[in-house]
Image (cartoon, rainbow, N blue to C red):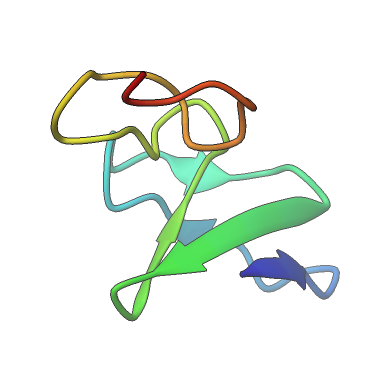
Length: 54
C-alpha cells in the first residue's frame, strides 16, 4: 500500500531504521518502508519494480 505522509509526522523505516522524509511511503506487514528498502525475500528485488521472482 502506498501512503501519503502528513507534514511533520515522519515515520521510521522498518528496513533501515532511518526516518522516511519522502512524501510517499510504503506500508506492509503493519510497518512503514522506503521504496528502496521493501524487497522480495526470495530474489531481493525492489517490490516497486515490475519484474520480481521470474
